[in-house]
Length: 255
Image (cartoon, rainbow, N blue to C red; front, side, top):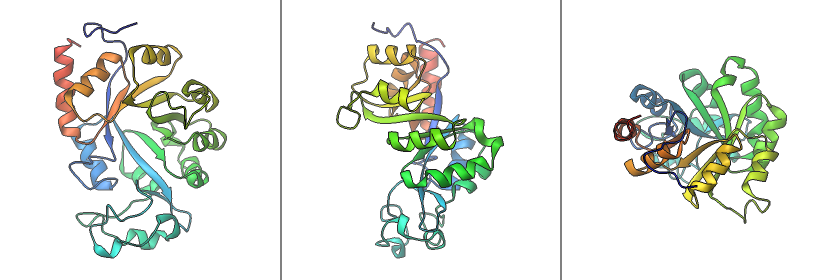
């Protein structure tokens, strides 16, 4: 079934700050998250790994080589092999540091997509969330790894889960099929890269009860397409531009 531009599907579209306000402020820092909230994002997305001393930290890459502004942060090796004290000492831009998951929960107010980058971080993440029942309703665990999400289903079944893929289908990573994986992890949401996203696929996933999102959203046209398809939202690198795109798209579609 094709979706015409005159018949947007359903729901409310949420602008999701990708690693905060990634294009406007050093990514995955407290300041970046606060800027994104100030701009008006509805949700934040960020990445969690584990330091060598068991601290859940908010960092995308396995090392600090790309994000370290201070040369002393280059060549340190995997963050999984470094204590948090050493990681925190690294300037990741404008004098900012890699925050802990706890610090991000303390600093933010909106809904959070907590992307698990390392399966070994699951137990520590679950322990943090268990101590903060007031935050449970504003967290969704996400990951490219079904193993991580299965583990979170066991450790924190009351927290919703969302699978991320680069596209669909993904026979190499998910030979049993995307929909079987979504069922296995008892997911609430499916965040799919644009590759392979068809109207029929979106209809099937949504009719099965899952929230859908397409990523990344880096143009007005991509946001508008997601709005027409009835996506729950999309991750954006520049939330200031995206909030403007959303207003324009809603006006065009008379929403």
